[in-house]
Image (tube, rainbow over all chains, first blue to last red; front, side, top):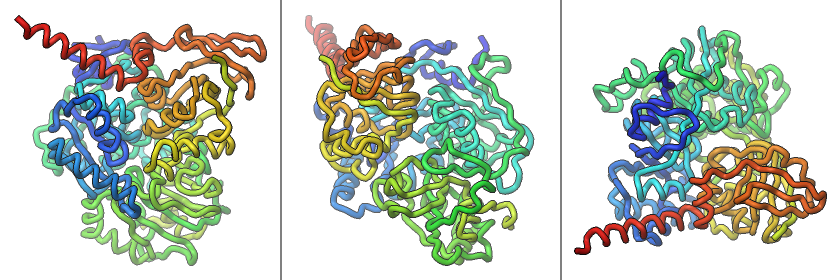
Length: 420
Length: 171
């Protein structure tokens, strides 16, 4: 039976030779990730009520990222509870204050081809960049996983999205996803598996692939997959994971698909999504009269090392326009250190950037928020009304290139003339 | 029991249902701001048994189960929508909040009296006299709703397993 990549991973996790889209299966979970917001503070009271313990502490990864920096008593209590629980539950994979969960998971080598994983965060499809079937679940569903090691799944259909050719300089994974969200809608993924393929996708570095897989959440897919290859293997080698076997983890040619779309990468230009939806994107040129107060480079989907490098290519030798706040929240400490070593951080600093913690920051809207009536361009994933500020805060989304170019211009700007 | 219909549009997101600024506090504090950016009086005037009607992709966005939890806390009896975001749908079932997919959901007017039959998969608009069929909740999920959510469901499963083990061990 011809099977897609998604079916192959689900079949393995369900202990079956093959599975058919639409059937309900029970899967064994290889990895369960949660953070300070979705994790212990919700799980602990329920575990106590059940009198149950964690099925396998070695398969759990816990990260603090949502309530950092903990600037009030409630946030401090949540972070303290998270640390205490990690100790009492014997969680060795506890990554405390070193970055955003999806990015840390990758750099610590937890994400590997063929893995079946769940995350207590909607951007968990990020794991699909490594050829892992990973999806977000809520805290009670995570409780079920933590107690039993299992979860039910409707075997997904696959939507295959191919990008052939090459993306132009100054065009990034963020532009691809804003384009796809607008083209297909926030429910375009139909809660199925979305697989990204084609020569333009294969040419992307891992962190760009992570942005694609991550924003499958905005596209409404359950997971977003990219078949692993030499790029995947090389990234994992650096993360200390050796002898990764990518060969089993690709879809069979001719496996039935729910939808198949093919795009020419060369035709895509920078995209900007207007308030209040990632599905409101149009070419950047249509926004060139929009003045901005803040340029924000942050989040798992917009401030990884690759994202910081993109911003630096625009900002080298330039400064943010007077009156524009340029805020940068590097997605992880490791990415920040590497950016520093490469001189990328220095370029951003010289451009007038203020640096924020390696955490979810304003993107989650749980701590610092933008002011009412401010106009913001942001490299993050979501600009829902009121998410990052007041209902009157206007948040536009764009790539790190576009955010950087807009910071320089003081209004939304096309980065392609500024690349160095 | 019938309730009043509250009607919302497409792509109602979890930031609107469970605003981030209130996520660190209690469910009471969070629920007081539920859907306020779309309907400022919602949390203040909603009554137990009221029903939410929505368009496509209700619950888009976050995995935060405080979204269905806030609706349940306010006494919402069910959400009837043209479609749901998958994560929200799973969370709602896990918390015991009935969620029904109904292609004709938007034919129900705001303020109408509606009666929902979750098991049977239908919604009766008492104001217009019309009855709309919904897609049935799959059996493996209906039993979670019947147990009052996944936590209760797990409690029963663990108790059954413990009883079975005891039975095996006794001579």
